Length: 254
Ligand code: MF3
Ligand code: CO
Ligand code: CO
Image (tube, rainbow, N blue to C red; front, side, top):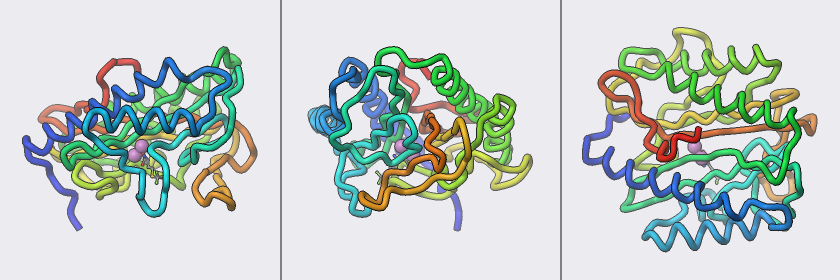
């Protein structure tokens, strides 16, 4: 099984979709306030994405019914939008994947609801740094494992743990393609990166233990096993001739 190399035309298509996904996360900033439910946020996302002629990739994906994943506090990822009302001091992740003209763009970021604790802010800022350090390892000839190595070193140095049960992934022509992108890995392990590969890096960093448990009722929402906070940022990146470009980095805010 090979990791497919995207053509310049395909990369252009993935770029447009990625830009829309990033724009959607930016648009949502005004709505992330105490008092709104995560289901209301999801409905706003669906309407916005469709207005731009795209569709939300999660809807109908393996039985998932919503247009985004919305993950507050101890939710690691795949938070199913529901009647949860945002509270002052919450941290929140919104993850959006758009399909535009058949091309997929996947990104997520953290939001502060009102004013979160210093403790929460430090976790969020460190997770953002982890994503950037992972991206800095990406260039033709490098081993993919170095991404996870850089991320996990930085997380551990700060006293945090790295989620290993969910990975980044190839993306672009489908939602999830090869390769898996682990966020904790051995140095100089894994496939060799080549120009034209497109994949996500999306570290989930936990304040406590790394382990997750999936909600038995909705079958998706993954929480930390110990109830402590988790944070995540995600970019869709393409390997270029001398490094990488984050196709979802439209605003330079993470
Ligand atoms: N967007 C998520 C990712 O980054 C995947 C969500 S799949 C879903 O890989 F089915 F949970 F929505
Ligand atoms: Co992803
Ligand atoms: Co995503």
